[in-house]
Length: 226
Image (cartoon, rainbow, N blue to C red; front, side):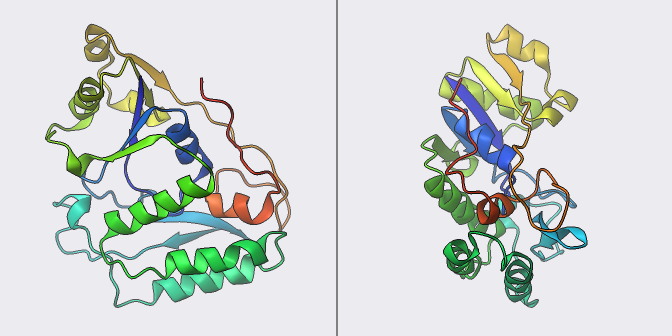
């Protein structure tokens, strides 16, 4: 049993989805705190000038002290319209634009003001389109209240994991000796973005899945689960 976990992510990058695909259970961490300048509410697309951030504005009051379950989108700003205009302007010449833009337009236009719920719908969309069948569980549906390394360890114990698939930054906070004592191996993800045709010059890796989907002809970038 392989478990992985991560915070919500808006227009996630390919490595986020690859980590889910390689796990048997993925825990959607909607009970942790919002992190400023993270990938929770933003990601990058490609423009003639290089990478461009698309960021969902959030209401500042209280969002650093509450969990993502209470983080609200700032709907006083026309961010959906701006994001869709940026996507249309920079991808209208992409090979799969006509196929995918209407789907992205419907996805971004969804009327949801809670950040975690909004990103949850985005995640389910991409998993369906990529035929990723990993079991997805929201941490808010579990009775686990620990934090940091203890949270991850408790999640692994809850699901009977023998292996935890961590992002590369996990080495900064995971207490590896605790996992070893529990008989749970930690594997740190090593994902290299495949190169695919892109507009606007030299290839830029690790952009939003949107960039890959608009440009690439392949049905999937995923390798077989190991």
